[in-house]
Image (cartoon, rainbow, N blue to C red; front, side):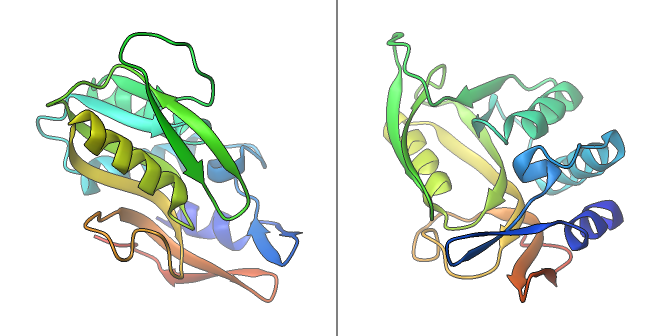
Length: 188
């Protein structure tokens, strides 16, 4: 994971109130995402995730889409995007997403009871988005085969006291205006 590690170490840091936030192509779309970085991440996800007998990949909009699309193309597993816009289609399931700095309603379609799903996302930080997604999938009656986030921001999150486990590719924290690698191999 040399490219991911290096790109995080070089990531610009901005402040949102008291929160130090790294800006990265995987989590923010800037600076530009190079194909070799995306390829490295996708290969690592495919190697780390349980993908046997998965019916669908599920990802929240927006920054999970590019990662999940690439995994879908490499595995031929269909992709479901959880959106921020309601369409009122049959089977649409609402969920409330709350992160450290925002709160939104999101909507999921095309996941049915009994579907075996792989949940993918860009970053696990507060765990608010991932918790909402996993709870909605449970309400639907889908079976979550595996859950993977590319980057985990070290520290407590909403999944710590739950039965949900999220695999990650790399764990980091922001300290004194710099990204620090906490675990270069992430969580299994």
